[in-house]
Image (cartoon, rainbow, N blue to C red; front, side, top):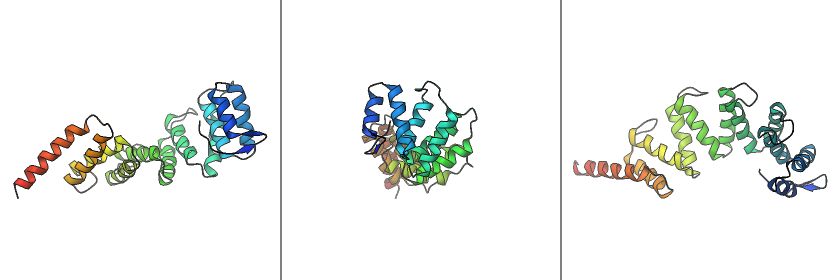
Length: 205
């Protein structure tokens, strides 16, 4: 559940989140609904997520989508991300990778690192979008800057191989090093291999 300061219908978002955290789902649903009815985007979002997680007596994916659309329309980036996931997973019984990519792209452009990874992966695999390695590299790079370790490793690999970018072993080394420092298990081995390649290149000059 996601939060921030807000008050509606005598209940604050903080109180509704606390109700949810202590496991009183019935009361949390009512409180999030009250916040939603007062026009709070995070009320829409949290109520939608309860429906998608089947935490309400009668989960309704279509209602969840409507709530997420309203929250996204109010500028809530995590709602854009959730809509991408909704369509990718086919929460309403219809998987739509093109719609998923459209929502992921909106969230990515608004700074969601998870969405940036999703967009990059879609371009890398040609899933919901045409295969486009330069676009994949661009979005993996953005996610890498945002701290995603998997993206740090992948953009390093793309620089190492020259996939979607000009081959650049120094940039590959830079990102493998960051990925290694952030706990990626394969990155230290790749770092050694790139160091060896750089040394060989230097020796051949």
